Image (cartoon, rainbow, N blue to C red; front, side):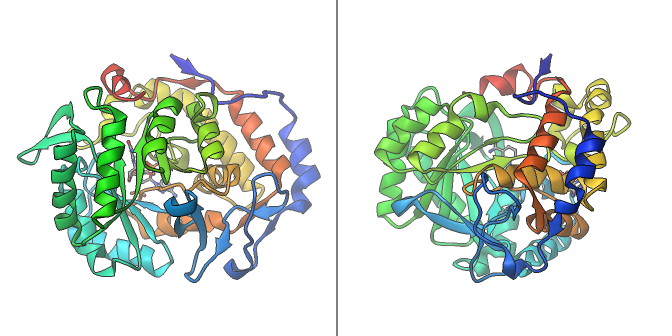
Length: 386
Ligand SMILES: NC(=O)c1ccc[n+]([C@@H]2O[C@H](COP(=O)([O-])OP(=O)(O)OC[C@H]3O[C@@H](n4cnc5c(N)ncnc54)[C@H](OP(=O)(O)O)[C@@H]3O)[C@@H](O)[C@H]2O)c1
């Protein structure tokens, strides 16, 4: 199966364009000079306004739902779940603290990651920093006696129970943002939104969001309790939210957007290829059609485009992938995950670069011309998204 990653496909010669725009490229001399940007503005950095900490900040959501966070967040999932190599606890805690030291204020986890041990890690590392940094988490996947059942359960009583359990594991008394991880066919979205609203009144939840839901569901949920963010998969190799109305409804209603797996589960970083073997027991990439050796071999052409484009500009493929998302709208905050300090620093530096709108279009066009091989999810995983 192939997915076309883009629109407006009109190829122009890369070398010709690169030569023409080469001198227009500048790197922001200091983080302090980064300005609040709009994706339509030419020649600006992609970060956003700088507010207090060491990184530029962005605001997810509007009005009472507004939530100010660092322009790049940190996905904690891969430290204990799904990404093959899980460093020991001390190393993970050290890296999470390195991220805090560098100004990251948004950390993302979920009950299902582990299950449970990812929230426990986040709680141990970041619980004492509550108020200074935000650990967002997610409910929905049923977990019984520490094991995933594969079912969804977003009934009000279950949300309440999961909220109490998450508060305990995260070592806090309020969850900065609580997402519904996957929609539950048996529980109307109005009941989910109403339960969250009650938890907000009780002071247990500050903001809320939903993952992988349709534009219609977003409208219905937002009408009951204003949403702060939608978290769905979005990156150069998966752009469904541009076409299915999700980004449009976020823009219209003033809801933020948090792209998950912004590096396509590491692939856009360039370190994975057809010879990569994922751990059999703790890496879901084994189950994803886009990560078969054949698919990775075909799709590596996309990484090659990023690498070639980046070489001219002193940027890595990961920095281009993150920068492309950041330049799309000032209310987008990607949450790349890593277990390595070098990757953390590389990813955060994507906030420093200044590319023109023409350059981003050029990159997007080149990538769009390459058909993506392999679906992002297998049939069962696809059934769980709207
Ligand atoms: N809502 C949802 O349904 C959902 C689903 C999936 C994920 N998420 C969230 O999104 C977060 C990130 O997703 P993800 O881990 O699936 O994908 P990702 O952030 O796209 O990729 C993470 C992988 O990329 C590698 N990486 C990071 N920086 C790199 C760099 N500069 N160069 C090369 N490789 C690099 C990491 O390996 P190293 O450790 O070697 O750096 C890691 O294996 C998760 O932690 C989770 O919070 C949410």
